[in-house]
Length: 84
Image (cartoon, one colour):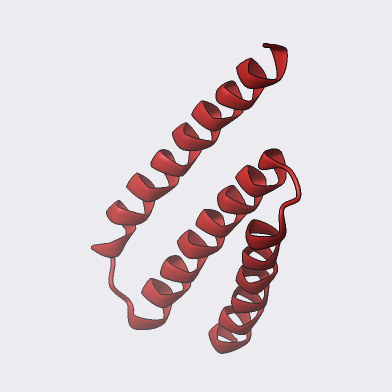
């Protein structure tokens, strides 16, 4: 069952990579990057569930928090750039 979930997460990652490369706007790229980071977090969690390693989950929380803050910072940048 985890193998199926990993395959679906990989497909989602490919979709986000395509959106990241194609754009067309910076907002599309920011959302694609946020989605890609979420997919990476899900992949690591699925890998941890498969192997039974609990020590990886602290790293996952840190990466998720950094992704959240980075998305907020980039959204602020886009907002200020559009108004000037």
